[in-house]
Image (cartoon, rainbow, N blue to C red; front, top):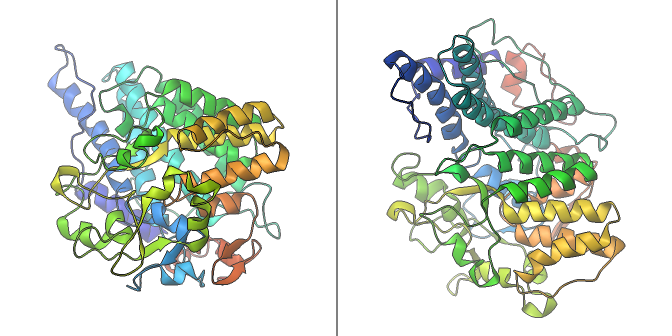
Length: 475
């Protein structure tokens, strides 16, 4: 672990710090020293965003793995990619631990530098709030991601195993900072994420740059907090913060006629994006990267040379074609006449003329609607849950539902599965509810199987002097 953090420190000191296109402009009285200091803080923040893009994190793995590990995906062309993960083989799991902590370290640098400048009177309060609020959001998101993949949710532990992420709230500036820390419990990590998001919501109030949906913002922090409460089973707070996010955001729901085409508009933010990652061809991804590693290349062959490794499972296609085939989301899948495989239109690129490049929506309006609907249904608020889920269904070509009780909850979970397919949610939805993973053509993976949790790197454990503890079953 010490080696990993020293590597991150080296990357910070050696370069990768660039100025940010944040819509925060110094006034005419700002001195050159103030501009330079502010740019350093913004540079750390920008580096945090840039590290979210990597293929080992949100650039690919976080958006595909959740469907591959679960029951939404099957292997199309056997390129060797995701084959072991789709079969839930040992060690075939999420591997983004290092990438998440790289983002966390940059976010911590941004927070520490901003606090330093504010205490010295070298930065305006509003600018400090905007930088720190965004950094807190990114730190919370990454800690939550690690907690979801590498540990159980509070109250869903198997055999009492509650170790989760390592909590890092200060930048690693030298060897003393890089000393290994033990993994915190899941309740401790959830508390830290909650604290960061509540502070971010306060700091980001009134932050509305022109590119607000490509940056952490108040609505995104409220939505992520609603997601945290959903995983925790705190239905009342999940409902409240989902409602708050929907009221705060400038995003809107895609109507039925535009559900598929909204994903094809690669050069503008997605209509539903509350927070999306801004990916630029030639800067963030090269042409070769796009062909070999982009979400587009893995999920379709519309562009010559794409790998086209994964497709929809038969069970997912059946669900999409139920209710008389009226669900417009079935049109995301197009059967290739040459191979018979089903190609996904959701991740087709085109940004900046690159057929494989597009921004990546991380939090969408429809996800937040689904959080609200589920939270209401699980509190027994059936009329409210019906109204909320019918807002989504009516914009997907489906009739209103009058289901109640467990039937309503089942319907909402099916809507989550269809709406958020190949956006990384399905595995985590099954896991947070303690459900087995069922496959079309194989034995299910029971929830109490140790392979539900991702393994830590053995090298990290060794380097930490065994301060880090491996998840059960991988020793």
